[in-house]
Image 1 (cartoon, rainbow, N blue to C red):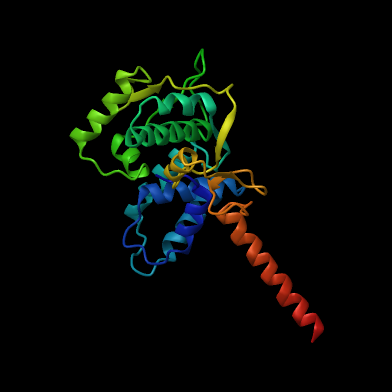
Image 2: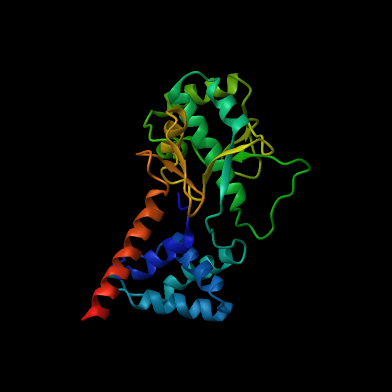
Length: 258
């Protein structure tokens, strides 16, 4: 799953060793170029230039349909950009009633993913619901990968069934999609916010931190992280950035003294 498409697009642009042109990559680039302010004709030109810059594969006329399909998709969906999301106290309380850490963490990650993809919904024509709904659209394979559990398909269904038995979720068939989706009933947006995140990658660690009373809210960015010491006030990412800035300041001072 790609949570930050700006970061992904910039990574793709640095790649000069593609062996073939993936429509998924071209779609992200098309959205990225459009987000950068280009017209659709400029987007097409930028895509062609990128393809022509590759060392291992040559862009040919019969590859053009890939770019056209990417642009069609980019006209329906915007670029996915990370946005802050929260897990609330009432949601965490309900998760804990499952009384099994493994299942609790799986359900926690499901809620995190559902909230993130609802918050960062890239569809230009968004579906409207009469009442707010929290829906998990991804596959159980993707869910278990993010939760860092590798159960087989049969065991995944059993564990999801344990959550559904509590009436916390409901699996529904969707006529317009190739797979079912899950309605999450454990959804209390008005409750006290406890866990803050803006990218679900490695979000599974935060549930263990919450359970062990080692949850930290960064004083800089406001996002949650695992607390490793009582003196820690920043998340790992802000602490690393702060360290880089201090190093730059020391180097600058040293140069000014010379």
